[in-house]
Each structure stands twice: as C-alpha cells, then as structure tokens.
Length: 167
Image (spheres, rainbow, N blue to C red):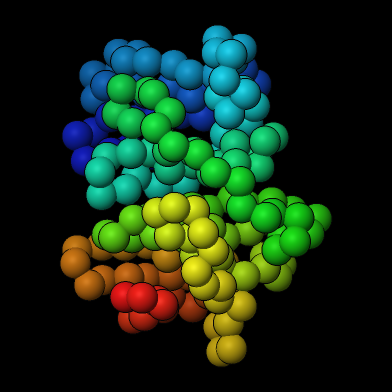
C-alpha cells in the first residue's frame, strides 16, 4: 500500500512486522516483530486503508483488532469489533474510514463475508449493511468529497450514497 507522498507500507507475515519505506526505498520505521510490549503491535497485520488524517487503518489478524497508526508509526487508537458474532469462521480483513471518522469493517474468508459494520469515532456500532440487493465484498472506498465506491460479492462495482443515523 502507498500513501499520497509515495511512501510504501509492507506487512511481512514471516516476521510479523509492518515497515514504512520512503519513495527512495529507505526504511522509515518498523513496528511489530516482538519490538513492542503493546500486544496490538504483535501478530499478523492486514493493511486496509489510509484515512483522511494520513493514519494507516489496519487489522491485527491475530488480535482481531482495528488499529490506527500515525505517519510516524505510533498507534493512536484501536478497538475490537464483535468479530465472532458477525464474521464466524473468519475475521475482519477490510477497514476504511469516511470523512467524518466512521470506520467501515468488512469480513474475509469464504463467501459470503458477512455484513459491513459501521462504527462511529467512539467505536460504537451505528449501522450494519447485510445488503438487501448487494452484499459488499470489501469496505467502501472514499474518494473526493461525496464519492464512495465498493465491490459487491458478485464483483459489481457500486457507487454508493451513504446515509447514516445522526448524519
């Protein structure tokens, strides 16, 4: 995954690390690999997205937690959605954040992947999208203001217009 400055993030399952490289290939920082006493930073990482604040949003597969990592490699937030209840036999693979800070979490594993869950900035579940017409294969992707796209289970690309409680 790359950010807008051209930095590249690499999750290595063998070493259980996440490394940020500059556009020139220089290692800027590494987290994981037993280098931290913070259990959120140990395990296998699933890179998901970069939010509007430049934070890396990812899933710790082993801990089943959503992590927010700032551009300096520091954990700034984390939470545990109720994965077993919503993603039996799998876990969360995708996490994206919209412009107002809501986090969208989608499952992985055998299809169907389960609902897309939406959490507010305080990590309260505010919506879930089981799909009446379409179930999402991955969390929505947020582009320029007002643009939202997602990939449906049937591989259809959807342009979404999202209305959430309290919005």
